[in-house]
Length: 465
Image (cartoon, rainbow, N blue to C red; front, side):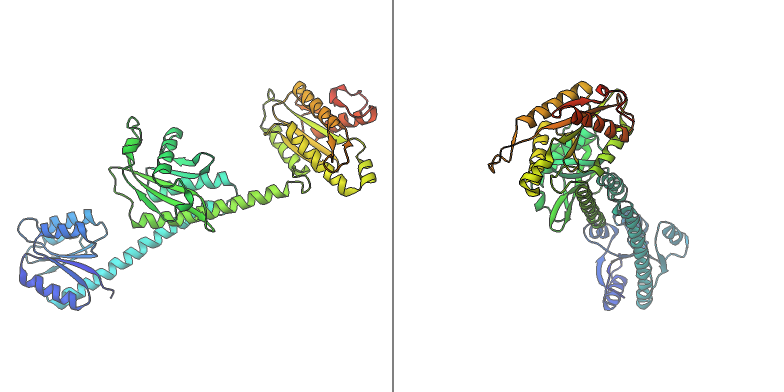
């Protein structure tokens, strides 16, 4: 039997000494108390697995001590001793949560045996509770551990953390350009979450890399806006680092209201486990996003490839209302074959990289640039109607015409572009039609005089099959 901390309570010194000596000889760590009041002082300051108490004592009796001990230490086991002939106090004790009762006088050996039986029963209960808790943790973590989408991971994990850790609010914080950014929240609105995130930055983790262990914080409400009825009650916080391969990915902050108990060791342990799983999931999602992005990038120019073009066009057409048009520019370099034939394919590749840089400077950050293949490029101009797209295409054409490619290498090559323009939903209602009709407009410019911009609706009616 593993040694346990046992509190023996009896106002009679002789049985108190007999029971204490017997339990100490059995290997347990025993503390004595001569009254219920003295016993409460020990219970409030020290952890015990078991209380052995007489029922009939002056002042606070054993039944009141049992009730208060269960409030202070909910998992504690209690054995009551009674010399009363009536069974009523013993029955009351059992109903109040006592493990068992013994009728005095009690032989020390019998008490030790009963204490061992009680402690074994308590051990099994604690193990069963721990297994149930681990099962719940596993169920919660499995909801997001296999997910490869960052937003879904954040949404599912913040719900799991909120329910499992018993907090009144939960934030998932990640590094941003200006301090910590609230990436997911539960229990606070956006403004409240931002106030709390700023406070945590100031109090603890301006440098997230320095946060390596679960860290409790107290006294938060004193630094939060007192006019906010929710924030003025948040007093306890548990900040859990999100780390992977010695790198900080952010932190989880769990909050409890001031009237509730601070976070105990079980919550710290469970929170650390869930934070580790969340960090792993975020890292996996980030790696997957990077791999996916790499698969959708042209290795030469760094622009998106045709596979990504298909996906983004389908997404935009599916999600847009008809009053929010967007346009597609299909661009092709004029006489690019001459560059390869005259200067070689290596120079030709450098020219393609340079035209990609030129195009990037001519479109907005949220527009999409694609190397469609060879010397063909596509630009998706978000929220651009036909007039806006035509103006942008003309600007791109003129810029390319004036530019001298490979100037640093002393070649000073002149190249021009043919650009075809199609707008959704004016010219096309499907992904395939958008690309095809912009391509037709570009090809018409090739047949005419090159170095030109053409709209699809400018083409002769016989152009499209």
